[in-house]
Length: 330
Ligand code: ADP
Ligand code: TRP
Image 1 (cartoon, rainbow, N blue to C red):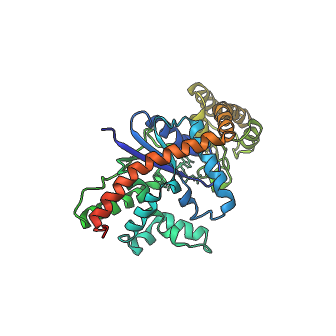
Image 2: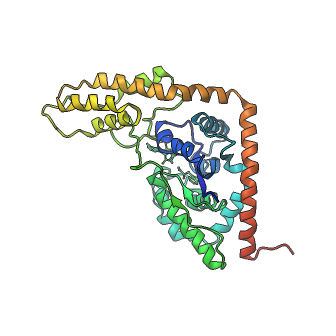
Image 3: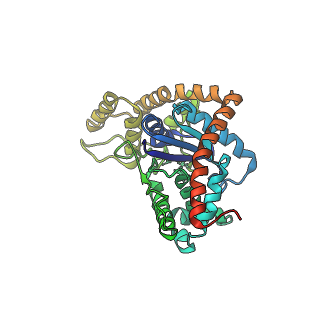
């Protein structure tokens, strides 16, 4: 039996290079080897993006981006979270044994209530139980996620093991974080510090036009040319090199490394090359995204097919979970 893989991305806007290189590209690689379920976490996005007007467009965009990146609905199950009501039912059941203290201690909860003090909703508090439901509903073994999701995965294991213990079952396996790339890639933003993120305003989107990419990259923060050989790189310069390593050939990286060491580097030239290499990577993706976005029929067929397959797997888990909990028909 193939191992079961589950992962999702929230529909909070278009996907950026960090999402692609840190997550999506791994999904594509895993679909051949494992029994994969990849979904669009539209319900999760309501915890921070409650505006109805944006939701549908974002879900469509992520689906088009999944397909453009190479996820193949014949090889994996691609679905929208809200199309699988069994997930939300399991979420409710798991919430009965998820404690206020552990949910409040979760780092992502603490971060988010700091960021949105006027919208500390119950969905934000129970974000980890919904994520646990996403994973446990297919009894997943592996979950490809970045480092920022490790605590959520730890909580998923806690909830699953607690369920097994409380109800005397072995229903839920212990899912592990998985990353086919080591070390984990962290794509930096263009503003000199931190990671590329949707909400950081420093992102290069897969759907950006070549002109947008050139503009954004040329504006990226850099630094003065080093004055002495082997001078340590400042953070903005390290970030430019990290992007270069992620998208350019090793010859290109070596060329600019040598120039840096020789104190002859011109960041303008490096950024020009970086922009062209990003464009070479994203152009085929952008063209496919546009093609899929223009094909409503295909998007809805893929979602319908995915929902059917995901519900089949989910129904069986939910049935067993309810049976274990003593929920039976009269
Ligand atoms: P964002 O931070 O832009 O809101 P999400 O938190 O929705 O993105 O992340 C979706 C997926 O993309 C996750 O698996 C996450 O680990 C990955 N990811 C996001 N940003 C980056 C980045 N800068 N570098 C590498 N991976 C990233
Ligand atoms: N919390 C994840 C993120 O912000 C998205 C997500 C929701 C997820 N449910 C999941 C990831 C289940 C993996 C498995 O990136």
